[in-house]
Amino acid sequence: MTRLLLGVTLERVCKAVLLLCLLHFAVTGVLYFDVYARHLDFFSRFNSRNASRATHASANASAARPRSTAPSCGPPSPSLRPDANHTATLPPLLPCQDVPPGLVGRLLIEFSSPMSMERVQRENPEVRAGGRYVPPDCQPRQRVAVLVPFRHREHHLKYWLHYLHPILRRQKVAYGIYIVNQYGEDTFNRAKLLNAGFLEALRDDPEYDCFIFSDVDLVPMDDRNLYRCYEQPRHFAIAMDKFGFRLPYAGYFGGVSGLSKSQFLKINGFPNEYWGWGGEDDDIFNRISLNGMKVSRPDVRIGRYRMIKHERDRHNEPNPQRFTKIQNTKLTMRRDGISSLQYRLVEVSRHPLYTNVTVDIGKPPPRPARG
Image (cartoon, rainbow, N blue to C red; front, side, top):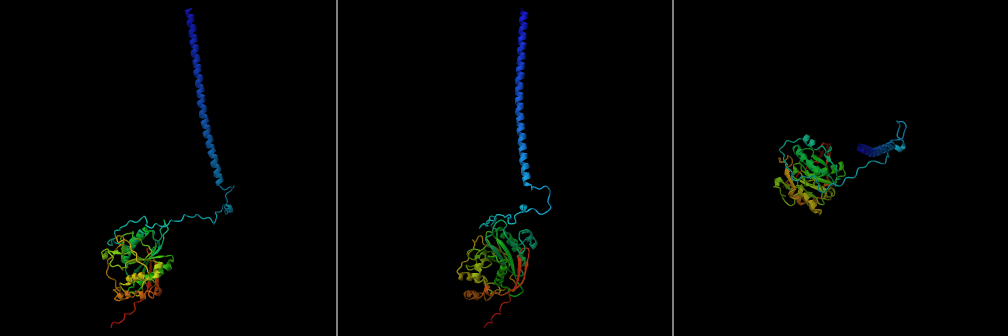
C-alpha cells in the first residue's frame, strides 16, 4: 500500500514538472516571437524610409536635368539660355573709414640701407602701372594725385617711393603718383612744375579731386598723417627734423601740402615767377589767406617728417627777388598762376611705381640791371 502511494505521488510530481516545462517553453516562445516581430518591424520601417529618400533624390535629379532623349550639339533652346539682362552683381563696397584700421602710427625712417627700384616694386605688387592704386575692400572718398617736383633726384626717389606707397595703401587712399620732371638745366621752378603737374594729372584722370604737393626728400614719420584733402587747405610737413621738429614760423607752408581741386582753382594755383629756391610756399600761404581760407595742420606729434640730407642742387640757388614778390601777392595772384601757365609737354611715361611727366617750363626772365 505504501509503495502504491509513493508511485502515485512520483507520477503526479513528474506530471507537474512536465507541465511546468511546457509552460516555460510556451512563455519563452511567446517572448521570442514578440522580440522577433519588433525587429522585423524596425527593419521594414528603415527600408521604407531609405526607399522614400531614394525616390525623392531621383525625382530631384531628374527635375534638374534637361528633358531630352539625346545629347544636343546645337545652340540651347531659348528657354534654357541665360538671360542677357541678368548679370551677377556684387554688393557695393562700403565707404572707407575716416580713420583706417590698419594704421601703425610712428614709423622708423632711415636712409642708410641700400635701396633699388626693383626692391620697391617687389614690395608693392598691388600698385598698378603708373603708380596707381585703389583700395579693394572699401570705396575711397577722394581720388588723390600726388605731385612731386623733380630733377636729378633718382637716389631720393627710391627711398621716397619705398616709404610712401605702403603708407598710402594703409591709409586706404585711391591715388596716382606723378613725378613732374623739369626738362633742361635752366633754373629750377618748383611752383610752376606743380602747376603743370596739376593740369597733366587731370588730363590723365579727370576724376582727381584732391592734390598733394610733396618734395621728394621728405618722408612722413607717422602714417596717421592722412594724405587727403580737408575743408581747408592742408599743411602736412609741420615738424621736420631739420627744424628740430618744430614749425619754423606761423606762415610756413613748405615741404608737403594739400589742396582740393576747388581750393587750388580758387587761389589761381601757384605762382609761376619764383625761379630758384624759396618764396613760393609763402606766396601760396598768402593766396590762401587772401581768399578767405585758413591753413589746417595735423597735431605736431603726427606731422613729423625726416629729410634726406643732400647738397643744394645746381641751378636752384636762392631767389634774391623772393622777399619783394611775397609782399606783392595781392597784386599778382590774379594774373600769375594756373590761368597764365605756359609750358611744353615733352614726355609722359608710365613706370611700375609712378608716372613720369617731363615738361619744358622755359627760362627765367632776365633780371633788371642794378642802379
